Image (cartoon, rainbow, N blue to C red; front, side, top):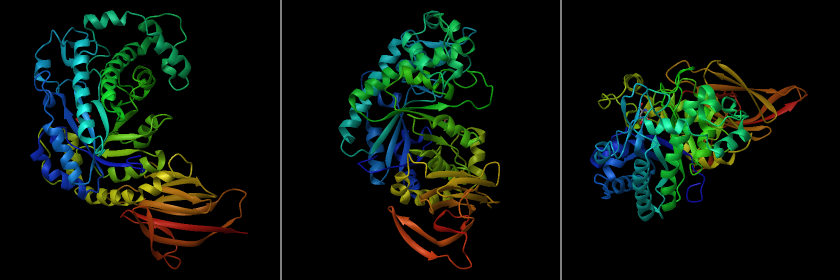
Length: 500
Ligand code: DGJ
């Protein structure tokens, strides 16, 4: 809910550095509007708001608020504090240069990393103090207007290169008893995390958690650190707070290949216990098996927010699926300002991203059409959130998918052969009337076993929503009498009856 109205974040996350310059941002705001985004996800870095210890500069934050408001957009701010993708590149110079006061994690070899230690009280307090100032400032300048909807605390945290920190202070903690609070939590939640089942009586991390001891240990300590930061911010301004995950990219990858200690799916219960101030754990999904990744995070008590997603031809399909299937509260392709860009993306981007950009220059138009359609449907869609009368379909694997909804089986046949995979949202408005939105598929209706055997349409209607209100288009009861969603995203309403 935003200002007492249901809201779905149809977002775009900016490249990491875009929001560090207000003039660089100028053309980007317009682009976000063209894409029909309603929210921008933008980084705010510790180094730029506290360049000298205790001296804060919120010029950039204020400029982002102004830019967003001027363009009718909301913001999700990403706090690039102690950690960003397993390193500490956005910590201020006065932190980076003082390794004695702000120690780093160490690899097994003893090598010092670029990652601030999660065992450093000094670092934790300094980060928390800065984050609290940011949140205080947001309350002062945006407490009424609510431009900022939520704040991400740090970014894709964890340690790369080792399963745990091997610095002396970390060693000492690794040999200390597992906190009773965590043991208690896990013994009540083992159904969801079998690998963390902890029935053994021994007290230390290694003894208790065996092969997952190091990762569990890191997850606990990273989460405790972030809890302290989040709590300090929450005291200043009660916005929802979340963390995002660099998820496991290949089955069997070991912690350290992906950042160890981050909120990956199998560590969520550790995080939940250690960081109760966090409202959400959000996956960054670049992997091709989008449904599987969503399912890992769309759990009771954890509404699905996807703050980073591919910005290629899958983006328009994935947003339909995330909303229809999982009642997602938000979706955002990463590097949104590069969508559809024919120009070379900013220097330093990963190779696969470059490919994602160059491959499909029409992605921008398609995503814009999808976001426009979904934006106008927000009040309708959210009516069905939390019910079992809405579902999502996505053209992965089979080209035919059967969905049981209302009094019928909906046989979804994807016909998209071209650029954009098909996807849609199916809603049973009543047991025999349906709202179907999306692109690249048709739907046939079949009776459920035991029901009257023949099915026919009372009506099929095309149309569109405007601010949640249905505006009818053609009545399609003649030659066109079929629920067919073409290559451009659209909505159809179909009403059925059965006869003997
Ligand atoms: C994941 C990170 O969280 C983002 O900040 C960005 O670096 C992307 N990867 C790049 O693909």
